Length: 301
Image (tube, rainbow, N blue to C red; front, side, top):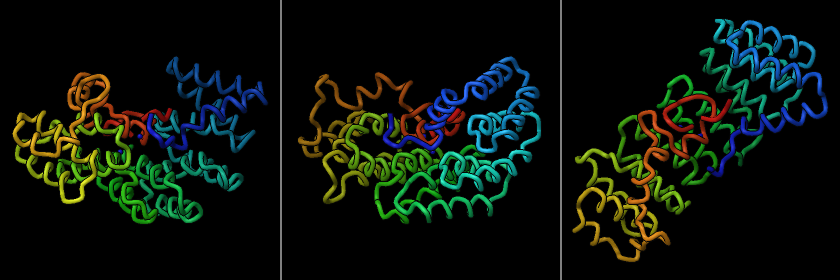
């Protein structure tokens, strides 16, 4: 809900396609021609080229991803499912193909099939975040944001890691207007990854006035981590409540080498780090590489 330490399955696609291109020059040239046809708006011709490639090489990742792009534009999306199912049957170990099958099932509104694919994948990779992340990305692509959040929460429980998917869950909660939940998740995120503090400050800066007090409380319970308390202090100062900001332990308000506090740095680069309402943020950008989603989770294609 998408720099960040968790490259998605699709992040490996370009490298795989390049490797295939080195070994098989002719197929690579065909895929390149397909890209050019897409750019020229001739998606019907691109589709036929990709289909021909898949008929010759059923597990060709670049061609299958090309079909994922063009078939929906031609109202032919259902044609992709049997092709991807065949590819997965031939190469069951490919995370790229599994992710594609999962996205295809979600896009075709086959929730039971999508869940079966995701849970089988997660069962075979019990310590891997990828199945849950790819499932959530697929759901976010069809704007099923609450379902995406439930998937990530379920994945966190299954993995047994309290801060797993914290950034993605925070951004999804914020998009839905659950500011208190977003504050809690950002507290966990900065505890696990202190470098996320500027991003967290930028994301929470827009919290409605009636939610701010509760966010501060959630970030500063007994035993709260130093990064979480520092985030609370920066938010209080940024929200025009210096008296409260300075009541939070001073060790939490140390300044960065640049001499500017995280909230100040976040505001100075806000356009590039914010997430909700269509803005881009590092967290969600990583979970959704493909197209413009709730802001983040993008770069897929």
